[in-house]
Amino acid sequence: MEDNRNIKVFLDDDPKPFASFAPPVKIVLDTTKIPDGKHTLTIVAKSSNNVEGIRKIPFVVRNGPEIAVVGLKENETVDSQIPITINAYGSETEDFFVIRGSETPKAIPAWVWALVIIFVAYGLFYLIMYWSPELYKSFF
Image (tube, rainbow, N blue to C red; front, side, top):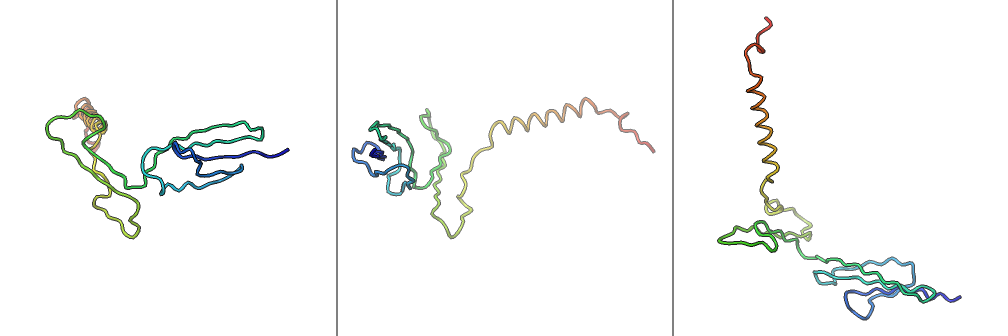
């Protein structure tokens, strides 16, 4: 019996496969040759009975620097003046580490403030309810 098994790998909507193999196979996808953005890897496998199976795997390529924006979210409705902090950092700096600008500054989350307020309020409640001079008499 002849082995007709074959795997073809397509990128996005290209009708020509960029790779064709006999299974099993391990490949390395070099994303440096693919532009940044959304892509789809389509794998078409043919069994020895000439039955085809298709699997599509969507993925996002980002070889450029990471861009962080604080102060404006996607599809947000805004008015007047908005302070925006923009930071871009990548992994291409191999020799030194720049401390300034390495992290994007963010505000302390509201839930942290809520926990601090609850903790302080409980402390004041405990102090007011159980403060009495009889409890603090000296044993000497």
